[in-house]
Length: 423
Image 1 (cartoon, rainbow, N blue to C red):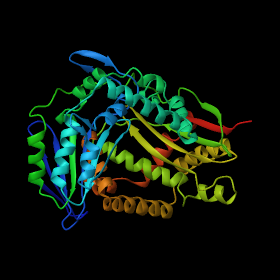
Image 2 (image 1 turned 180 degrees about the horizontal axis):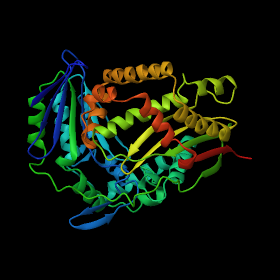
Image 3 (image 1 turned 135 degrees about the horizontal axis):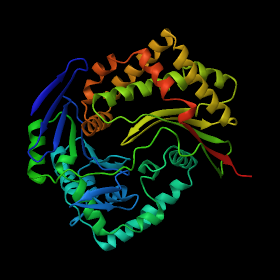
Image 4 (image 1 turned 45 degrees about the vertical axis):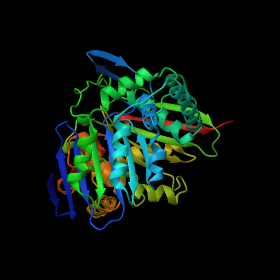
């Protein structure tokens, strides 16, 4: 494996692309007792339409998440139980664009790694187990649908986008998951769970060559072809709808405002835009921002106000929300503040404060093995080296953040979702 030093971070990463196309990264952490492995696939809730064996397939909403649940089943039993016997902590998650399986342990790491690689790469589904899982996931979906935070976010996505699969819940709907069969699960596994579309990241006091050897011994010798994906037609910056409202059992109105931003293809420009967007959030409505301080002192907002900048395949948006009795006023204040800062400029002192805090947060994230793995997985799938963030961060200027606020966070690109008390 090739050792790459990152002196500015005090980190060393061993990397190798196996003959089957799998990218392996081992982050060296000498003298740590804990070890961590994440095996991830570039496949998520948005990957509903794809081409397999020359035929375009339209799959039910929620199938990537459903597949994640079923992958723990093996002919011998259940991988969770196997890992638990070794004292390992394990889990998985499915996002809009990634499914990841991970295990953490202090002993028997290589045995646990082999279990992880086997159950993720070898599918085993029966009609009985698939039908049983439908009831379990349907219950999860119903519970989430009763969550005001989930509803306000989901309604915002349907406001911002007319046809993008970002509108579709990652877990699907009770109706959509009923259409999932063992064969659809096998088809999706065949299409996406293939070495060149996956990555393995391990963190700890480990032997990189042995990690690679374990992967070579267990995984297929060849990868399947790259799968064509369809995320719908490219959309303009105008939201599909300006506002969504619904009533729920809440004590105070809940809002989420979104600004439809320019999507980025990938590579270091995407990493750079992510940094700019995150800093724009801190400047605009972070807890130390002038707007947050003023609205908080006036009693218009509380500590629930917050937001983020997110980039997905073919979609990019900044969102902000929280509880307030005056949601439309807060929405208008945020939009007006973005215009003022974008056109009039951010004070140098405040910008430097935000810049230091942003960089410090990125450095602190390296203390978490899970955060390390997620960042390396994200970088692998989006075409950049996540450990080069200090060099990319240095290229960001105050003018970049001001331009982002001026061009992206505008009334013309905005929509608002509201959850209001019943009655």
